[in-house]
Image (cartoon, rainbow, N blue to C red):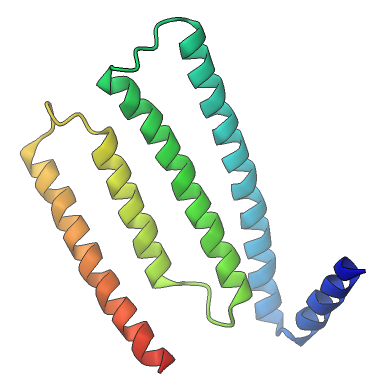
Length: 154
């Protein structure tokens, strides 16, 4: 009974949307489905690779490069999940498709992933400074956007 009420509510909201809003929601639904498939495949591949390396007895848990590879794959899945969640949040809100704050957070996650998988012993100093500058710039923009969102909510 509850499920039919939810479908009726979704249909009622769908009828109130404009043509462009229906188009946006359809695109968001398709992208969400594709990203969900990619996340499932990425997790499955991650599980298979970890089990294969443990089974082959060449997995050394104290090896830093092994952790870099595993954490890189895990962070890739986390970034995809965050992107998926942001699409679902966009579908629920009445605002436009582009949410700058979410894009900035995903970019910060990608940079953190890069820093985690980077081999610091062979890292170039200019590359480290560039990543640090990108983190500071994105952090500053995030702070400005968050502050702007707070003012708009009041």
